[in-house]
Image (cartoon, rainbow, N blue to C red; front, side, top):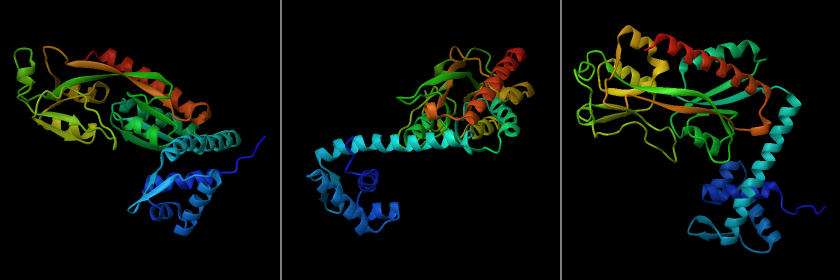
Length: 305
């Protein structure tokens, strides 16, 4: 078998130069000297026999050949990292840490109970929990290596299993004008009131969700903020039913009597970010989440709210 002349480190340095926009920036990110970075890229080009970069001003830009090779090299390095992580997982048997990314629409009661049940069985596995909104889960898969993502939007190239149906309910505080309306509320009436909207947490891409039928809207960064503002009597919003059951029972919130669209459901999926390299701790956590989601759904049905 022919041995490769170019190393993974050379490809990694080239990627950094392109991604960071120059040799100095790449050197800082890689904790190397600028001369070392320049030499690595020069040697790579010499080994290949043609240039991969051209300098325009102070920025390094890929040639057409460079673009093709850089694209392939990204896959190559990702496969190498995946291979090392698989070897680590097989050697350890039980993950030392789980990176868990959760859409804020995921039923919070189910999440908390599952984490509580997981802790005594975790064998010391640490959980790094990150909450996202909408396409934030997809971005986490694209730019990171999370073990598990609970999301409504599945990134290309990943398999996903439905884990729970989330029901969003249009609500306002019990003393809000919409909550005391005598007749079913149509779009024209709804557009005259302030709507609370949850901001997409993704940095590079974002999507809008919800009714958004009015210019009168406030945007907040979390479901908790939206809930607190709506309970205070300001505006209305579609919020996850599982998270507002107690407020509905206590009369702090009231479901709005809309002509249509007062309730809507969508799937949340469990996405194993590391595929076949998923460890036993992550799989146990998913099992516990599934149990608690089923319990949460049963509680909602029994309370008939």
